[in-house]
Length: 256
Image (tube, rainbow, N blue to C red; front, side, top):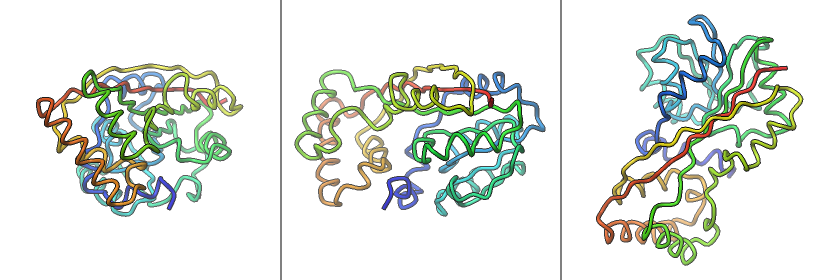
């Protein structure tokens, strides 16, 4: 199974465990894209609507794509009060498209799942000539001592394939996405912004979050449970909760 298709199996957990995004991010995107209330937005990979809601609450019409039936079902239920939000169950690659119909295309924690030879070209084709692409993702930072080193030891022992930088590092300025953005001919120079924030986790909330991550989803069930029990025990042994720091990295560029 491809990693991007693993999330639907934990859709309910995903909806409650995954973090949302900083409110100033939405205002910055709207200002950069010069959006007006009638401008349509295309969302690539909406999940359960963590990013969708930021634009829905501000009154924008959104077409949100996701391949997960259960994910879309939860998103539609969560956003039922916003009639301007529509959903389509599809990967971006398989979606038929609506050429030059959207002022903004956004991908929150999802553009890395789209084949790069398709992503930029197909996205540009859906945008109006003055349209904008916004790609963003939450990057967790290593927990402060002593949990940071304790987690590293646990992963090295129980899940060495997941040791090292998190998959979300893809969104860092020195990660592969920034380089891809620089190389594409379909968009102009990218503007990068970073939003630091933090979230308090208990042992239960943090292991719930880990259960929604694709790398953890692909572990054998027994291996995953042993790993998560060790993580939970470490958190409990160090006070029962901890502050997980994040950076949300945003990239904005206009269609050429």
